[in-house]
Structures are given as C-alpha cells and as structure tokens.
Image 1 (cartoon, rainbow, N blue to C red):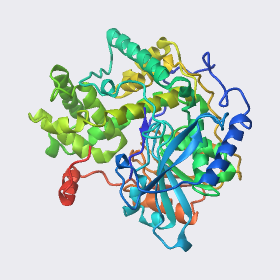
Image 2 (cartoon, rainbow, N blue to C red):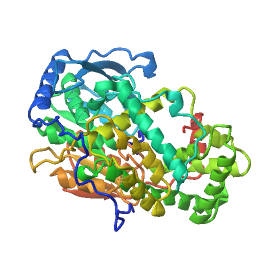
Image 3 (cartoon, one colour):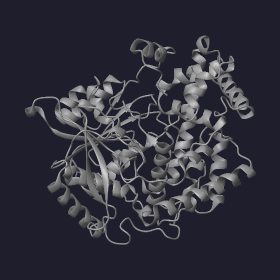
Length: 539
C-alpha cells in the first residue's frame, strides 16, 4: 500500500501465522549488484555529488505544468540512472524552492522534504512556507521540494495506458471468489510485463537505495555541506537508508510516520502488517460516525454503521453511481479515512446522502477525476517498481493466497485490496535486491527526530520503535491515541512545537516524549471551513 503523508492501538501480528521469506527468490541481487556497498555505487555517488556541487541548480520560473507561482522557483539536477556507471545515462530530477524569508543571519540552509509513496512528489511543498504551522521554519530555511526518479517530469515511469489504470466502475470483494482471484492474477502478470516492456533495462534502477543516493546528489547541488531532511511515510525509509549510507552528511533529519525498516519486513510483511492495522482505523471511523448519528443517521453503533456501509456497497455493485462509482471506487474513497480523520465528516456525509437518495456527493468524492489519469498511473508505476525491486517477494501464488485469506478473516477492510496492488511483484521481471540492514552506531549520527501517531495504520507504530532502536540516539515523539498519517506541521500544536524546536534549535527531549491527541473532527467542520474560505470541498 502506498504510504503518502498528507501535507500538512495498532494491533501487532500476534499469533497470526504469516509466511516469512527465508531465502531470496531466483534473480535476487545484493544492493550493489553483488559488489560491496563501499565500491561501485558508493564511488559513483561521490562522483555524481561532486559534479552536482560544481554545477549547482539554476532556479527560475516554474514550468506551467507545475502550477507553482512566485515566490516558488524551479530548477533541475542530473543524477546517474545507474550509480555503478556515473558517466553513463543521466536522468533529470525536478526541484522547487522558496528562499528563507528571514534575515540572512537567521538562515540555516535548505530543508528538503519528501511526502512518501513510493511515487509521491513534493514539488508543491514550498507553498507550505505561507502556512502558519511552517512560517517560523520558513524564516530560517529554504523550503525545498522535488520529484524523485520516475515521478512526474523526473524521468517518468509508466507501466500501462493511464485510461486503463483508472477504468471504472470496479468491484472490491473483501472475500474474493476463485474466478475473481484468477482475473486479478492475470492483471498482475500483464502489469509486470508492461513495466518491463515500457522501461526496459532502466527498470531495475528505480529503487529506494537510488532514491537515497539521489538525495545525496541533491544535497550537493543545493550547495549544502550537510543535509537537513524531513521524510514522511515512505520518505522515512529511504531517509533511514541515507542516514545509514551517509551518516557524516546528516545535519538534522525528521522521520514522520516511520516505515518499519527491518529488512525481513521490506516489503511483503510490512504490507501484511499494514492491512491488519487498517482494520483498527476503519473501526475508529465507524465509532466516530456512530457518535454523531444525529447528524449522519448511519447508525448509533459501529456495527450499525458497518451495515449502512454494506448497503451502499451492495447498491453500487448493482448500479454504479453516475456510471463510474462502484464498490472499488467507494473503497478507494473510504481508504482515506484510515489515513486522515479530517476526511471523516466529508465521507460520512457522502454515505448519508447516498442512502437518502442523493448520490452526487459520493460521485464527486469517489469518481475518477478527469485529467488525473496520467499522474495516477505514473505514481502507481513508481510505487510498484520501487517496492518490487527493493526486496525478495513470494513468487508462488499459493503463499499470497494463504496469507491474505487468513488475514482477511480478521481484517477484511483492506487486506485483498492491498494484496492486488502488490501482486505484480510476484511476477516481476527485473532483479530484486536484498534490503540494507538499516542502522547506525551510537555517536555516528547526529540526533534525529521521529514523529509517530500511536494508531497510524499506514505505518504502524511498531515501525517507529524499530527505527529508533536502529538509529542510535534518535528521539521519538508520540501522538497518543491518534491515527493521522503524517503529523508534522499538522493540527497538533504539541507535535509542532517539538518539530520546530528541533529544526530551529536542534533541541529534543532526552529520548522520548508524548503529546495528547489532537481533537476529533467536528461533524460539520469541513462544511464550515469551506464556507468561511469560500473554497470547494477538497477530496
């Protein structure tokens, strides 16, 4: 499942028996293609960084397609497609920036941000400089975003026709039939073939390790002696790889909603753990809707809300809303409530309206949006390539079938949808790497900051604990009994105070600290907010 933090109690696996990969499948390679990590790619990264430092980045007006106006400026940086061959084919990454707004004496360099994915861009991140939660940080730092390799205009990757990728309506059975499984297996095989055909030999170079190396080249191109970086969601994983490979180049790093970096969990077992955690977060949403039954009339208990949801699913299966919203589109829209509780009023209102005979709010929120097909397909292609390339995956369908069938008995909400998203990795045609054993010795890395919500489903809390264990001297800030995915710069003033104190002054608690949860959403808060600002609802 793609883990992207929105700008601005998780259950463990317990006694559930899941398949553990004990040996790599045929074709798996070491992170550097069999060479020592200190050899070919390390040398190539140093060469590329030296070249980027000399060239710098020429910033100017952003291309029209970026939709970014002044004071945001844009530029590019070249990186090797293959770090073992730094003089070979180069690819161009797009970069955006807003200069620090404070006096030059207060400037602390560039803050580079990545929101996750794999497959997400932070090109729009410099616009955060105008938000109240970021203004103090933006006085001291140039706010820098970029599109990682494969994403948007940065050597874009594609695996299928975008129109086919967003075709609707679709089904989304929580307990799929044998015939449906066979259909999805065929689709996964075709998708993997499409990635190999369209990308060719370049496909193998879309990896988390190369994302970390690209970050080192970007640091050099920005003219920074050391890197200040904030990664959210998947951005924490390749940020942790960067800290492992280049600890002396780190100034300050923030890991917001941390992926579990244990090599045995990258990526198959992390996705299973994620599917289990989504069940708890789905329950949180239903409990909140039940609490506000006077507003939504979907049920006074979580179980009654679930039955209302099933009524909507069944009706959409029989007759898709607007001809475009079937159970698959409904599920995709509702998945957002597990990531961010600020979606709760919007989605509950749409379900309520549909059951009262008005499908328009649901159509507006769940139907594929015209003009977004290319971006959606591109993001999914990068996600798939990176996760499939990064690590061994089971190649026997029976392993997937057994693990996900067992898991769906206790966590039906997201299990099979997540499995279908990742199934192309079972049939991948590029070599798979062995994941790096993330970690640093005490004193090798400056103090880093980890932010985590205790009930986060996309990156379960255990990942933050594991990352803190591996990055010696790191400090963990926990938002207790909350589940928003990506909490830095959000709506918890306590979390933001720790973030600001760290980035501006390098100050942290000794080892761990906690924040009370942010308030639950008001059932009419989004309507009121949109009316006050005279803006349309954001989906």
